[in-house]
Length: 248
Image (cartoon, rainbow, N blue to C red; front, side, top):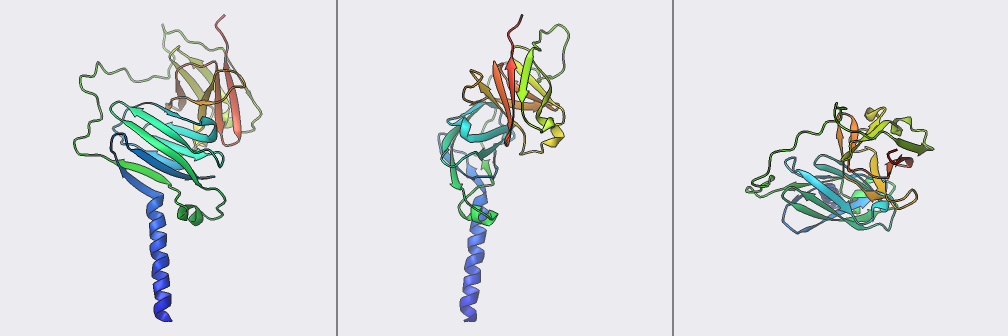
């Protein structure tokens, strides 16, 4: 009997170790390989590329179904619903990544259940020794992005916002653009720890569908790469809408 109990305990321990190994997983980078990302409702999964990667842009096939934020070389993904499986494509200066976002845990009550279903908490990459992260013969490096207002540059400040949220930290205190980037300054970025940043989406019309836009954070300001007639800031159930009014 003791031998049976010991065998059962060892089996459970091995199963738990396997689930833990799945939760934090490392992929070897291979061009054109499709990498599965297994997620769960209510759980954020981190995708970490090499810190040497220079991310150019990214896009997902079903942006309404996912919360997707990026901070430098790290992406955070979280499903909003059950039937939202889709893909995510990331393009860097020298590489492309293709991910399949899948929801594998929906009705879990304990995190161990989610992990046993295959949910990944973190995915990172290892690369061949000869991997290059910068293109050869690159033109002169672009100047660092600045969020400060500079004399002699033209800015557009005419933005309106609408919201019903009581989360005041999500309401911008200033929004403007320079024709190339849109700068959104929130009152307290410290209210959003890493992995829980607000997500910003674009819209073609006021009531249109959200689509993913490329964002970075500089000096406590959310910088949207591009200008858009409508932007939506989301954090969980909290939403703030922004409208860029035409120049007068």
